Image (cartoon, rainbow, N blue to C red):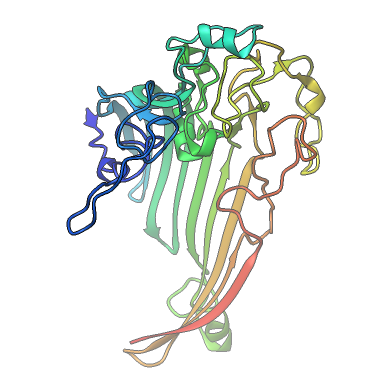
Length: 390
């Protein structure tokens, strides 16, 4: 059982989340020590007035639940290991967790139900008609994680060492994975369509990666002094003491959202930087041969009218990621205490350009287009160097 101590709360208190009552309220300082008396200005409409307006809740702001609690997570695992040889161990494990009370935020005080109506009629459908939409953080988030993990570990022997691991997993949450910029949450925060029904946003986490295969190996070529082949003469000096190293990763793409701009549900959402709504599904969004210019089919969606969209959260996925790094070393002994190591290294040796997430906002010139590589992927880089060991 693990509890989150919310270590960033002291930093948050200096910013919008924990300022009181929220970041939208003026908190002026009057009559500082040594200063002259500050004259009072008009009450109504003056942001620097020390006295509140008749209703001080007119501006949208960012609030945090005064009963906000620290998150906690139950985590467990069961593992079986078997040693097949002196150097080879295979293992299989089930790893799971259930996390509760994570930060789950959204546009509060929207109209409880979508539908037609003038702005005045929409206000009457709000829980607090005198207050506009406010961004509200609650400790009501939930997350689920289950995985099967397999590993083959061979210790270095006879010039060979390798570690192969594979994970088959599934991660679900109520939208709060957007906090980690893993999905299209507003400004990196949670991605809820309906604040009053967060359970309807339960879906794959933005960082869900169902398949992940990782391979690393070190192999010394069997040539040279002390090796089984070509261990004498010039061939031993030229071909001896070479070592190859490989690190390879293959993983599934990550989920991403499709969204529409504007208050299409007519719930009075005044958080202008948040495209909260998802579209309706009217066709097949998948393309047989997706490219960076058209990763999904935008024509498969329509903009909802006075309602929330029917398309689920995080249904589509980005490109799978493949990255292989390769290096070649040669150790040249110069006496008993000094040696020189030549290193040639290539990162992303096959120059595989795994793509990042496309623009998922509908009705844009770049809708469906991918303009970046997957996280951690760069074009091929090569370098060489010498290292003296003494």
